[in-house]
Length: 615
Image 1 (cartoon, one colour):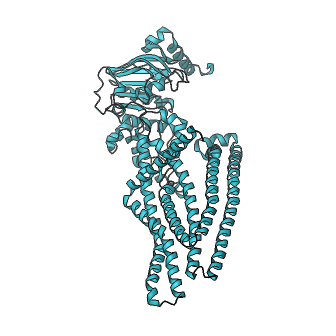
Image 2 (cartoon, helix red, strand yellow):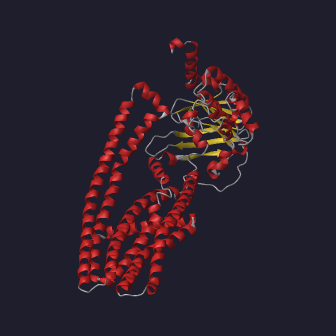
Image 3 (cartoon, one colour):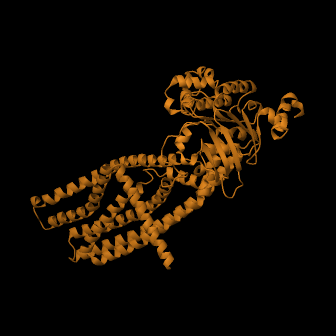
């Protein structure tokens, strides 16, 4: 092996030791007395087989030499106690191990989601590699890591058993000890090779597994099922599900056949060694070389050593796989901050305005610039409307303003303060945002609105006021339980599906208004951002909601984004974006008289309403 290969092997071993140590540190923190109890039981169980073998030998030899019952009483009590411990310890171990896994699972989930919540931006959630890591990390539960927690104890117990029984066997016959240990070497090598082969199979088949899950979900997904029914795609995707499943099962079948062949050969080798050893022991005993008790101890030792070595190898293989899964958890929970974090501190209320100064941004160095040298001011107490074609950079500007990303170049200033020097949570506390792709939570109506400001989550008067402003109060009150109505049908049994008391579904327009109400819960914020607030509404509802928003925005610093230019004409400043640059800005009348991009788009939309047959 080269020096580089040796160094890599050493580093790999150190890495596995660090991971194993990390798991056990977590296990002890989750339940120190539980871990200590399992350790004590493992040591005891490891020594019991040798103790049973020796106690049995003493009793049989005592009977063979004619010792009295009182003389054998001590050995008999010891054997009975060992039998009781052997019978009771596994039940206690199971209880302690199960409770340890529950506590470890809770601790790990807490750490994982604490780490995820610490990510201030969006970049990690847009990385396919990190999302894969996150999915694997979420599967690193207390149960999944059992081969590294309770499994390590099983391995330790097997080591203790193997050493104690090997010592017993060596006292009886050093030669047979060597034969038994030599016969275990092929089993060790074969199990390790099979473990690596299984891991390789899992990795190679993982794309097929992901595709199988993807196609299967499509067939049952509520959003996809409409098109699947319309275009008759059900059998098409079913065929793909079954094809991927066949590929996965073929790989599993291949490895299972390899395991079957190897295990058969190992079983034959084990039986040969055991049978040969028994023949040797009987012949030796017949010639006076061993006592009856020695034969009993010899048989127990051979069987015990082989069983212990089998447990040892299996535990090592399963522990190795569990450590690989823990790698994903460790990676997900040890990520550095995705955005530079400023120390906590209050941000002064907005008094002058927000400035974009020569802002450049792109989502990836391999992609084109989304914003290019953007200079824009949102004056305090004024309304600014942002318009432009799809892909112009409008939503990206909002993400930068909320500091979900940082500019690649330039800066954004809040009353002259670079927002990169402000803690993201403090900045966002002062902003109310309705995103175009808003969330519809499977919660009650009151909870859906109250989430907009957790300080007012239980304040029904504020929730109802926000809902009235968003013109959704009447729709909520019309449901079976009003604001306490669950806006979902996913948590109930089939027998409850027709009972409106168990939950209702809202229309797209109603959800739009509910999401707007959630944004309006932040009625004390310094900046209000509305990204397509009426995209899901009909013409009459759109008119009503924009009238309400005009009243709500009056005197507030606000940013309105809309493709419907009639909704932005009364803004104090209208900004037209194209290819990440500002191409026009001004009031409605000013832009119309300039006959530029805004006038062209506005005239085109207006013509569609006046003369729809010409569009």
